[in-house]
Image 1: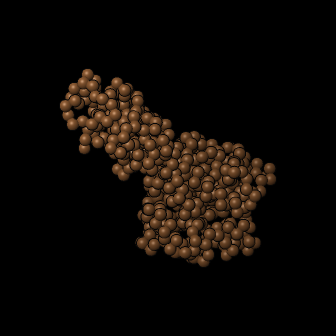
Image 2 (image 1 turned 120 degrees about the vertical axis):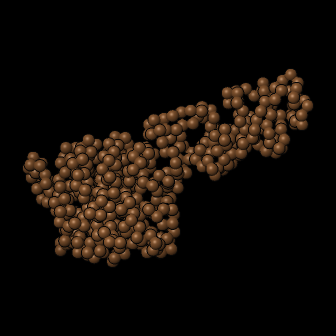
Image 3 (image 1 turned 90 degrees about the vertical axis):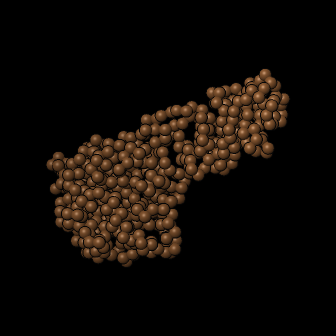
Length: 137
Length: 355
């Protein structure tokens, strides 16, 4: 497990998403209201590209006709078959125990700290005065 | 009830003609029937001479389908040692356009069933025929009949005015659940719509086969509209529905539900799971090749020992001889199918059977 610097924070605003390649692995990274989530991009159902899905909220119902809508933007729907995955757990809504997308930890790190550690930033220079999005994979 | 008892969940008490119902109609309706010359409300779902409508050995002297208690007794109940049989009366009540007339005839049919059948043989139980044309009237008829514990089910047709799951019908389901009455959905149409979604077919064989699609659509409606979520104790029994289409249909329903389940969030578990808990099917017709191995595989696909209910569908011609139980159904399920599953499905059977 290595830590990869995937983008300067300023290039990854809230509401945006990126598909990153980390040592040959395609990983979908989402910034939801300033909180970062990363999932293996390949949908565990049939292989759809999750980063191209729609982010939706969680729809539940206490009984028919009584909708409960919460966690807006925290559920990714695969663009192929509409399966919903919880960004916080990677679990599918329909088969949470059997079908789940692999999760990766994402954090924000200061450039000053990154300059010292065993970090990998393959495609851009790390500047001490900036913050960066770091993925553990 | 003895340990080897058998419960037949679908036999037909056939109204022999309008004359038979006259004593059970209110005076105004009785006079109106005579005044208008209404000879019959027979639906075309079962044309009298169609082979399906009655087996050759289950017809009267003039070739009419069995329509007497004596025929039911000698040719079904006694012959197969049936301890309890549920009578489903298919008469044209559901076809009427007048809500008032439908209510009047539903009441007459139910009272006729009590007096001419249930009162005359302690083995018989009945399904309440309801005027689905008007939800209030249907509920009122359930309330009227429910105190007689020999009524064990509410009877509706596979194809009616609107999909069964629609909320306009919910008071009917509430009443059924409240009174321990499953909803029996029987093959047949009110002919409000073409019997196929493509339009009217030309031939009777198409009509009859189309019932399977009707059942599928009703099942999808009941699941997706949330009837089973709203009424978790309600059981729905598919009568004369055929059985073998079910696994394939549930696979399809469950598969597509996974992609769009947020549209029906009250369906909060896989449809096959809901159906296995709350839906039951009678075993005639079964719709399988006459090959025991194939039947066993199809039963296995249900992934449930609880769903199948024994039924002869007398006098409809679904099988020959005494082969009600399709060859290939595992022996270990016979007891469940012939007795236990029915007792678990119909709470009122247990109560009356114990007395």
